[in-house]
Length: 323
Image (tube, rainbow, N blue to C red; front, side, top):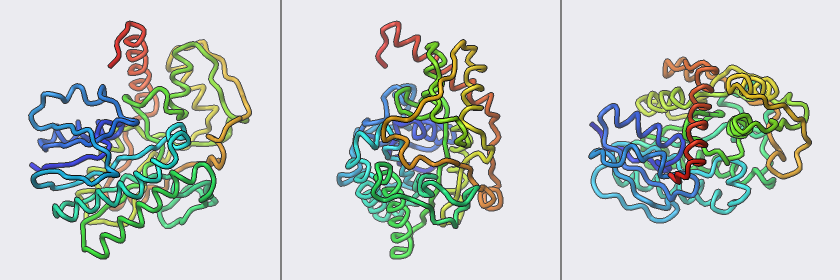
């Protein structure tokens, strides 16, 4: 089996990808500087002889001994809380980190998959968003540090493919959720689940009419695995095309968490929602046709697993556990 490197391997998605690769018999090396990842995400893998973790900042020169078959480049600062707090590191990991990871892939003769984002479409003027839509992005707004870092990363990936005839792949990830998300990452799923479990009111911005499409993490990982095994090199959307309003999503979280929480409508008062997309829905025809992929996990099932994870996490934290 292959020897695989995951940058951002202790993160939410990276750790689930590591699980899948190990289950298939691969050897996995996870790099992470733990700025947004957490050791608890990979604690169950420590001791596995086919898994190795290296605390590493991918914006530095990357040295990994031995052969590599594939590099999954997931290192990123993907939430508004993170990229508003650390705007320059966000730009650096998207630009320098991608450059370093591509250089390593070229040196090893490895295939390369870039985990990009639906944020390359910005606040879209086309709905749903197909891969050939170039986007509506404010490059100098507070979200621009993330949006443009990923757009640059895509351009860099395609440049390496064209210049060096490398095997590269780009997936554009839409709102993924599931166990191992950070409770403080500022995303709508974690905000609502944490508020519901604590009995707090769920805070919905404006009238709750903005929409999102939620994809469970196991479905995303399956799509990434199919993409890296394909011969396709243009960007591919990976997400759930079932769109719902934020207010309907809030009501679903309250019901599934068996919470008495109320819903408060508030006006956003910080930069996290500036240039926030009003709609988000992937056009996944390309993934269906090229990869035979589409999501299979029902929202209620996925949310149930996510709520159970956070219920256990909060209980452990109250009990004094720190991992």
